[in-house]
Amino acid sequence: QVHLVESGGGLVQPGGSLRLSCRAPRAIFSEYIQYIMSWYRQVPGKQRELVAQIFSRGNANYADSVKDRFTISRDNSQKTVRLQMNSLKYEDTAVYYCSAKVRGEDYWGQGTQVTVSS
Image (cartoon, rainbow, N blue to C red; front, side):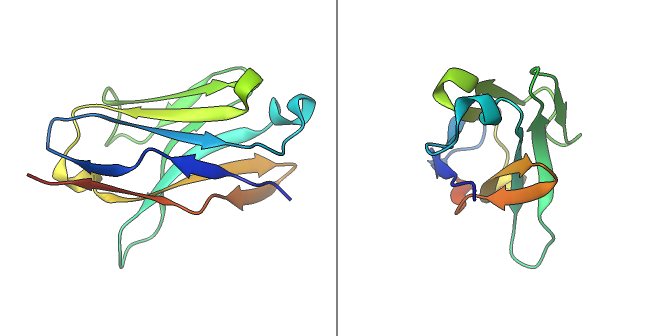
């Protein structure tokens, strides 16, 4: 079982920035570095969508809608993955979920609300 704890959501104006964090406090370091870590988001009535994903060596993928605005990073020593979100838009409003893929299984955090509103 992988326990993920998210933080950093909130209310921000369009054009603003937020940083989300996701810790895996119970993970063993030697295992954590193998996790594929991702951020997803979901709005009511829609499917959960992949926002960004980062692999053990630090290479990352992004949804087209967030490229050049969002940056995913990981600090393996802190067992933490972060999502820096800049130039936020109304359509970025969603519940953001951290996910860890571990030996083919997906684990999820509790979700954190991001609201972009003036």
